[in-house]
Length: 144
Image 1: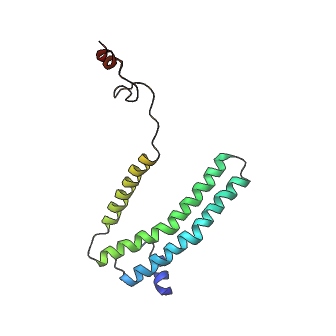
Image 2 (image 1 turned 180 degrees about the vertical axis):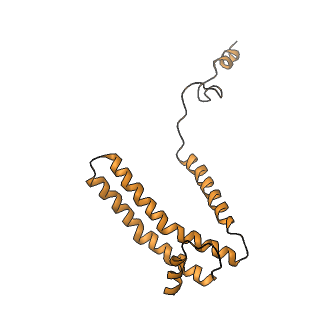
Image 3 (image 1 turned 60 degrees about the vertical axis):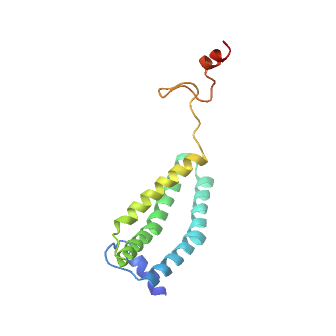
């Protein structure tokens, strides 16, 4: 079992070849556990340390961004690599991983747009009148 996990990390930049279902399942299970219960608290701790000991907000943002980039490189590259090789084992092109990732990001962007909508500009703009404001012309026609 430990060999499957090490093979996943050794092949983090290997996008050719195939991987068995058992190796894929073990690697993803262990990797998911590590990312949620080890690295996520570590990421939150690093962000808090940057906030406490940083004199400026720019430094906090830089440290937080650096930690996130390291987290993404360390944990998403091996997952993407082993997923591509698992697709190859099923005789599917690895480019579909990119397609599904972009599709997921687009779906996430749509969901985020509905969860926290951006407030509209008040008044009319180049696309037409503000739909929240009553149309004065229509109201005058009603009372004529």
